[in-house]
Image (cartoon, rainbow, N blue to C red; front, side):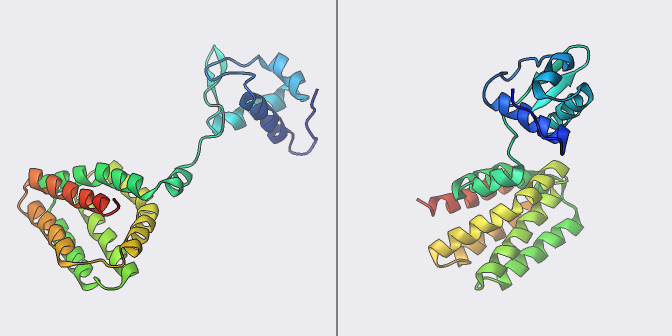
Length: 222
């Protein structure tokens, strides 16, 4: 029987238990043995086994159901959101932006205040002033789109946008470098039209224009 080392005993027990789950000893949805049986298998006492279970529960591997026992909920530690985003390719990034920003544009057209509309206008003007320098262009473009999401008054959409922003920024820089040009009149025009739709409270036009803009970016990759 494999025994754990004395140092960091609960953590070592958790790693051993995780290795056995990875090896398929217990499938997802299956119940673990009780602490009385599990602790000797790990070479530790019941209190250490209990701590190891808590450790893996905190990592999303196990869950404790009151009165039923401990069950396997995942075969490995789930990837963090940052890890998933870093692996995403540019097309996946644009698809996610579409899911967030089309709905945000529609909600902004419906819910924006006059103060928020001024912020969107200011962000658009700032974007126009930074057409030529790539990094500044991307930064001001992101700021413009964020101002729209903020005006949607949807905290979840804004949190999604902010958590997605570093990977989105990276993807846009990669794509625009590949194109070797950016910030043309056509590109600025569609952003202006998105703003005008939001200013006019035209919900359908705001959503359609946001979708058309992101679709056009995808087409540039083909």
